[in-house]
Length: 455
Ligand code: ADQ
Image (cartoon, rainbow, N blue to C red):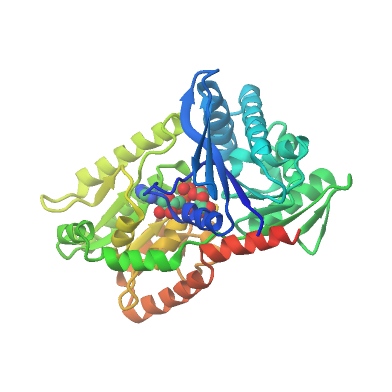
């Protein structure tokens, strides 16, 4: 089988213990066929000190490229995370555009392409990941690369009207036509993509998937909802149930109930709304005071971006106010923890929880929702409360679905979840678990790579 070359902003090395499902899916794909994973090293250097670090054993290799501080500021913090991220998450009011950032984004994509082009071998298949690297395929083509190249967008794709808000959007999104296959998370994202090409470029769409441009370019687009390593999460949760971390958590609850949220600290995750709703739940349902806690695990991310720092102080204020108002000497409503845990520990925490609160304002998929379900014990499963605006809601239809913009919806869902009879919890859980077992991360990776091979 031909070698696989994976390109993403960050690379997960085999020794990375915090690596999640995506990292292990890529690593196992690379292990099967041999290959290379290319991305930013995470190091910032001065101009002229850039290195390309090579690791691996010759069968599975890693190539890690340094960036300068200027490139990091423009490509990563600027255009990727202050322009594309808010826009693609339906938040145009947070969009911060600058021509210099856009130029930086393009030049890092070109830089990546130049390095990758030198590392490619005849017959390689290339798989590019996510919004940081949309123009990479076109840059590779400009360098004469004729390998099969696929692209997967992990975050949502909003309707054309929103995409068109981005200055010079045509220079960004038309680059998708350079790929043989463009994968998105849901059929809604796929509709947005095909519609954008129809309206902006007069493309015609055959079989709902083949996009033909009037200039003769063509590519295939399809939805590939990403999954998790369902079996691994389930086994990890079972093992962790008796581990020290889960036992300490359970003991600390003293038979009270537990709702859990686990998210990167990001404004797309709806954390202020979740905290507010939990406070409202306690205010409205006195009978639940001192009977249930919310454990929110939220490690800071992108703290060099001002919106993320503001979010952090906002959450501290709401958690502080809610705790000040309702806490008892022996009970705190919101346990707010700003650090990350390894996947096994998280799996144990999910299993110990009665309710998983996953309430993003917008999310490409949301793997935490899937991990929460996979970690539940079959005989006494917890209840997933899930935002209908997360990609995962299209598959996990047996969750208690809510609109995160309506705090009362979250309040009602919490009450319903905490009171749900065992037979109903089991019924909902088995349907979701069946789906997750059939559509796991290996299925996702294989369907994408098979579709790429078919292009
Ligand atoms: P993210 O926005 O990072 O991913 P999500 O899918 O929920 O969102 O999480 C990714 C992984 O990070 C999960 O495996 C989760 O367990 C882990 N994680 C989250 N918080 C953690 C913590 N506190 N400690 C340790 N691990 C933690 C983007 C898109 C999503 C899409 C994924 C995959 O925004 O919509 O589902 O990519 O395509």
